[in-house]
Every structure is written in C-alpha cells, then in structure tokens.
Length: 113
View (tube, rainbow, N blue to C red):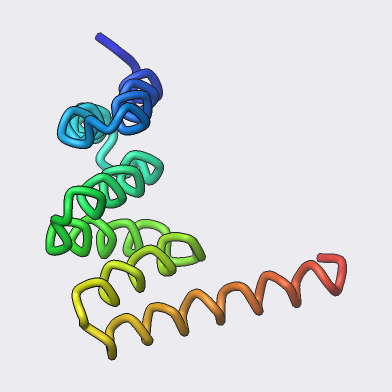
C-alpha cells in the first residue's frame, strides 16, 4: 500500500500534467489513509477549482479551514473560490480572516516569540 505522501505526490504530478481528475483520485486515496491530511485537501480543492467545480472546491476548502483554522492560505483560497462564484460577502469574510491571521503572524514574529 502506498503512503499518503506518495499518493499526494502522484496527485501533484498528475495536476502539473493537467490531469486534474486523476489528481483528485490520488488525493482521495491519500485522504482515505488520513482524513485530516491538509496538504491533500488543499490540493484537491485547487484541482476542483481548476476544473470549474466551484461547489466542490468550496466544500473541500471549508473542510480544510475547519481542520486548519490558522492556515492563511486555506482562507485565502476559500475566499478566491467564493469570489469566483460571485459569493462576495463570503469571499470578503474569508479574506478578512486571512488578513487577521497574517497580522497576528506578523505581530508574533515582530516581538520575537
């Protein structure tokens, strides 16, 4: 049986070749091994977005934000998915979360902790 990281890497290779459907299948296999594998969730959401499957991208993006609430990129990506679907209030809310997290990160780095 392949490790989740190997399946994820195979999915990335497929995505880089433009085979987003195949990539999603590899990410699903990785998630079958570890449902909380955030790298695979993020990649899956992006693959769905590339296919124009914004509802699926949003669903996966929400799950990612639940599992990794402090992940700036997760909130930024979800904001983009919402924006592409003309869900402006939702997009703005996620963008605000990402900005707040980034400000907190900057403050933390600035005071040496």
